[in-house]
Amino acid sequence: MHVLRRGVTNGYWNKYAYLLSLVVQELAKPADERIEWILWVDANNILINPQIPLKIFLPPPDEQFKHVNFLGSKTTHGLNVGAFFLRVSPWSVRLLVKAMALPMFDPTIDLGYNMDETSLKYILDEENFRPGALYQPRTWFNTLQTREGFEGRSGDLLVQFPGGLEGSRWKGMSDWLAELQSHPKKWERSVGDTSYQSEIDQYWTFVRNARGVLHDAETKVNELKDDAADELNNAISYLKEVIATEAFDQQKIEEAVMELRNYMPQ
Image (tube, rainbow, N blue to C red; front, side, top):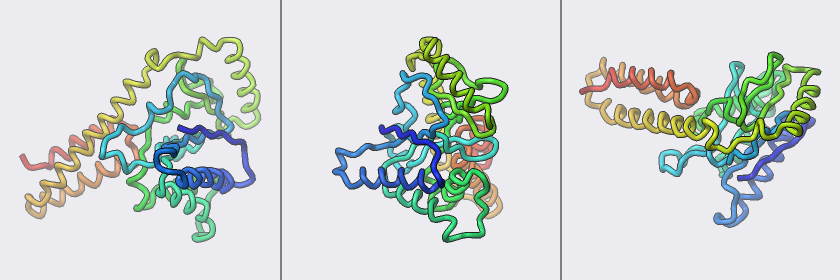
């Protein structure tokens, strides 16, 4: 695992260009010498619990997760690129190249203020890239400091200071650094003393089980008559969408799985 942390750049493409250069460098090495995953962390984050091993967030070594190349999280406003995991792979090269080239091959797209988030989200939503991404609970590695306070708890991996804090962001970061220097043991906990492992195990179990139900439904859809097959296909499409875009929402996955099972032949 390799961790990257960089400050603000003159353009979002500089961030992705630097990340792309590292992925390409790793791919040029013999397979047994490569870094497998990279964690990108923006400079508006502070690590508060270095005892959390980063590998616990990565996909299990199951065949069905070998296609996963991106692990990220979302806010209510969309993709959060303050911290995300990227597998060293040709898929990641294509993703970063397309994200950087987006304004050139489609100048009509309004990237808005958060260009890095918008461009990456746009490409991740494309049909060729959607299956390679999964979204995890944001508070695992994008826990926010808001104007109301820290939304996390002791033992969390890091604290992120979003742009919405404006001028108070810098004082907030300074206060946090002073707090960590004065009371490091208050925030540092071994992974066994946090809920990370149980939450992560549950996450992958939900995703694995949902994908298993999908597989069974796709196998049985040909056994149904046209009307029933249409209903089952709609339920299959909905569960696929939930897994692809909201795997962090276990309640929504449960509801989508239940709906799909209701349409499956007994």
